[in-house]
Amino acid sequence: MAELRRERQKAKMEVNVTLHSVMTLGIVFAAGFLIGRVRISDGIWPFGVAYVLAAFLHADRINPYMALGGVLAALATYISQMDNIAFNFAVVGIATALMIVASCLKLPMRPLTAIIAAGIAYLIGTLAFKLSLLLAVLSSLVEMGLCMLMVLVLHNAFRFFAESRQRRVLSDEEIISLLFVAILGVLGLGDIHVFGVYLRNIVAVYLCLMAGFLGGASVGAGAGLALGLACVISGADTLYMANLGICSLVGGVCKKLKRPGTAIGFLAPNLF
Image (cartoon, rainbow, N blue to C red):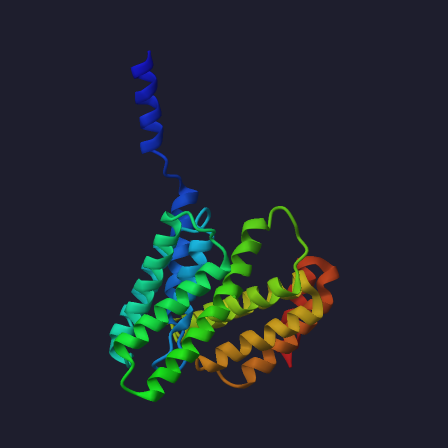
């Protein structure tokens, strides 16, 4: 009987793969790919590193190794446009290694731990690959500062997704963090299009509708302007930012009319 129980328990452990877990892993990888594609000019790539570090802070819900895979895949697509390939990949690898060591040593997985790991990773990468030019060292310091800031932003966003079932009220920090994550997603889509329809525009409109419905006029207008700016940076027409801002504002005003009213309020200004 004991052996039969062991075999059944082993079979349950082997078939512990569900559709939900596969979808979650895919979303984590896709998010890492999109965020890893976002850059400032051709030499500053802080967002992918921050995403991996934040994933380690929430390793119980977000697989950090799938996040790492998505970021590395994104960096690989831009190898021909990077100023310093070795530095970018080394920083990601060192930061990941430091977080693995920290988890093995049972250190508390707090934002401070990830920020220290980012600082050490950028310090080692700068000493190894960017010490010859002062301008390169300064750009590395800027990238390190942005990475540390984005670790806090992504940590707040991940914490919201982890606790979203328990509460519905969002703090100001969570709203800003979620908005930053949405902007990064739109920037990551870039100029990807299908039959002339840009995916960034579809995602931006959907997020603006959701922001107006959940947060009202002020949150909708802010989200519309911010996401419109992200679309403009990615190559959309400048008027698109004003369009999204006004449509999201009107949609947020109509939030009391539920989803149909918000959608009609969002579409109505487009008639003009």
